Length: 105
Image 1: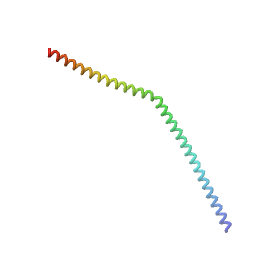
Image 2: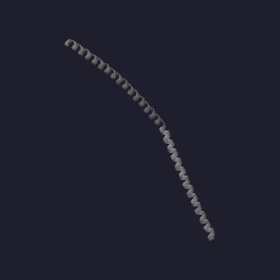
Image 3: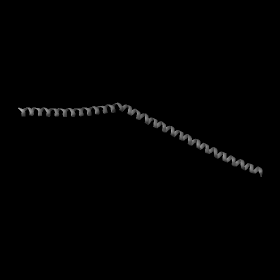
Image 4: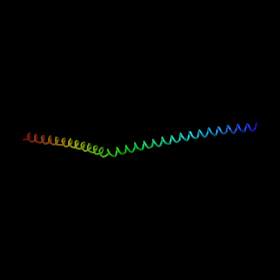
C-alpha cells in the first residue's frame, strides 16, 4: 500500500513537473517573440526618426531662407509705406507754405 502511494506520488509529481516545464517553455517562447517584436519596433521607430531628421535637415535651409525672404519683403514694404507717407506729408506742408506765400503776396 505504501509502495503504491509512493508510486502515485512520484507519478503525480512527475506529471506536475512536466506541466511546469511545458509552461516554462511556452513562457520562454512568448518572451522571445515579445523581445523580437520590441526589437523590430525599435528598429522601425529609429528608421522613421532618422528619415524625419534627414527630411528636416534637407529642408531646413530652404525654410529658413523663405522665412528670411518674407521678413525682408515685409520690412521693405513697411519702409516704403512709411517713406510714401512722409513724402506725402512733406508735399502737403510745402503746398501749404506756397499757398500762404501766395495769400500773403
